[in-house]
Image (cartoon, rainbow, N blue to C red; front, side):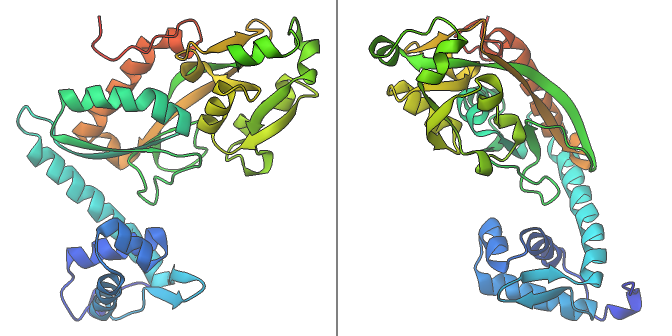
Length: 318
């Protein structure tokens, strides 16, 4: 049933709506409490106050299922989300009328790209814009922008639907790498026909968060991975210790002289990264500036991303 103004006996408090949004996004009062920096009882109390003010239940609550939106809650979340976006836009316009850029941005990315590429670039970005705080989430799983887990995302796959602005950030190549010690102590590799005799390091297939990561069997038929992990960084360190051959992004492996490309002309995988954010956030000045900064960083590092260089360039370097 629609939420009618006559059903609102008390005054709505924006802070209560903010608590409501976090519970709706996490589906747990404990999860909302962690994101808001308060305790569980504060979140539960705020939800009760809001439900009393609205004169209706907003969540079905259970120990096993957490907080599930009711029909009235689903209706309210759309309005509250729009209000949050409006408040953010207003604050952005007021705070950034001067020269100094300010505010907070949370950016999610794949693990390897976040650690080996974005972290150095964002350090330079922060130096240029010290009043902007940045959360970097380099995680081996998808992050939901709809639930406001991040403001910007760099992902392996373009979102198929949703209120997003999306652009292709860059292509990047992966190659086969091994440590010098491994290659010196194992049989020579002259062609792809020699590869099945060697140990490989790869992903745990059924736990890979994207099918774009399952390239070992397609690239090297018959290869067997003796060590599997959900983390590309773990694969990198295992290969560095001589644990076997690994298909790694060139922007990671090419920066490490101890790793040697194996059959670089024969074993090549090309993927791309997509940069996207919610439509209502794209016009925020801090988002716009960081968006263009990331595109400039990718453009400046086309050689590294393509495996043609082992040097990471920071935006502004000559």
